[in-house]
Image 1 (cartoon, rainbow, N blue to C red):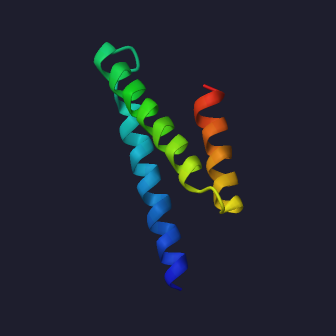
Image 2: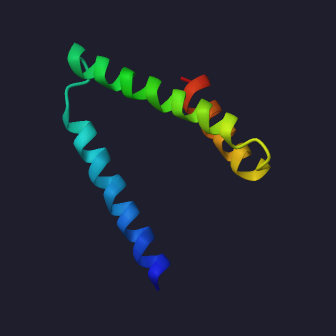
Length: 74
């Protein structure tokens, strides 16, 4: 039961975040710069996670997949 509630809260939180992100103007230079800075920070954190997770292949593999999809593909 606890896991179900957690999943629902996460889903609701992500939905709210998505709606908030969509309401901003995509052509606003300040918004674009902020989003790019956040993306760079996320990629830097994933690189650090990959380095820190040596010896934990499953979690490291997941971090590598996130890095490839979020940082390399974009």
